[in-house]
Structure formats: structure tokens, C-alpha cells
Image (cartoon, rainbow, N blue to C red; front, side, top):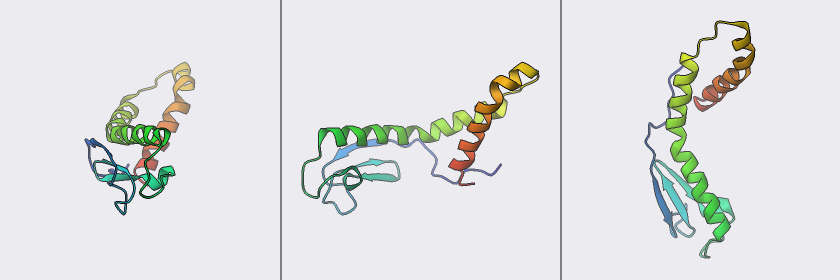
Length: 109
């Protein structure tokens, strides 16, 4: 398994800004090294962002800010699970394989 190359956390949500879009003409939110642009949420340049779009943008920002911690926790969990009986294997194999696939996707594999 390769080491992840993403920027380590913590990624902090810095808050909604009316002029943080790619061209400073739309709203945005900075999360660590990432900026969400209002245009990606249907924002029209130089117009007030709708409450629904702002709420969705902030929810996405909080999800993104948790990704590095979720990755570490999931990686630790998958690495420490030991299945030593037939019933345990049937119960946990599919979720473990999905978790391993998600971790590989996060590493760009």
C-alpha cells in the first residue's frame, strides 16, 4: 500500500466569504488548501448567494475538512481488524473490501 500524497490535516473551514471565488466575483469558502467557488453551486457573479446553495457549500466544506481524519481512522480500522472465524469473515469481508477500495481511491490508486 502506498502512502497518501494529499496535504495532511487538519483542514480548517475558514468560513463563507462573499468575494473568495476563483475570480473574486463570487462567494467562496476556504478549507485548508481548497477553495469552494460559488459558481460551482449555481452562484451568479456579483449576486447574493441563495441560502440553499450557501448551506450546501458549508456542508460540503465541513465534509471536506473531516476527510484527512476520516482517512486516518478508516485506515487504522482496516489495518487492525483480524477475522479468524467463518462467521466473522462473512459479516465483515464486504465492508472491509469497500473500505480498502475507498482508501485506495483516496490515494489515487
